[in-house]
Length: 108
Image 1 (spheres, one colour):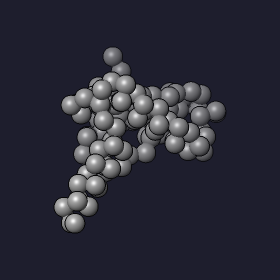
Image 2 (cartoon, helix red, strand yellow; image 1 turned 135 degrees about the vertical axis):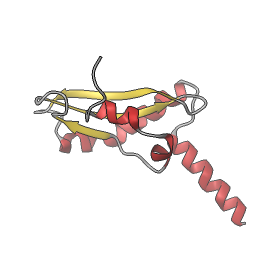
Image 3 (cartoon, helix red, strand yellow; image 1 turned 180 degrees about the horizontal axis):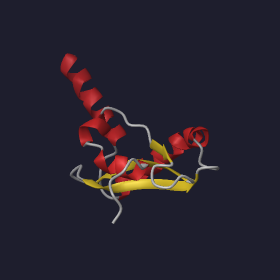
């Protein structure tokens, strides 16, 4: 079993729901486990907002550079949202939008 090191997947698994709710971009790491490997990850939550796992994209550090990962952020986040919905959960974006509309209604 691998240690919970600085790799993006391990960082995603250590992300609390509260941290994720405050807005979370995909986590990027390079060389954390292997000097030639890079990865990006997001935590995946289930129907009762329990941590199920992490969505991870990994590749050679020469190709999955921080710049390239930056270009993938939007689609990677959308895929994570789709995965959470398919597992019966609400996405963190859905959760934030619901909280914002609740606070708007409370002010009205």
